[in-house]
Image (tube, rainbow, N blue to C red):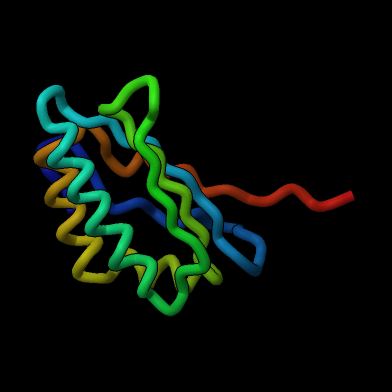
Length: 117
């Protein structure tokens, strides 16, 4: 989804190692839209946790800045993340994100775990 010059659909990183796909996102609300964004994130959290490929999805509101939200996600693998991106609840969330936040696809950071010693 794209709104104006904002693109919401993240690209799946290339060259990722096999295995779980961890990521984090930081989303900031437009002033006055904090509770609307919180409600959209709460709805998304419940839906994503029901996805078969979701290992973990946690959403947090920043204690020092209640207009900033942190999402911590782990999917079983890259295919599970791609499936997640194609769901109706993610499409609805992108619509809410466009209305209530300053975020775009750049809010999401895909991670690669460091090897254990």
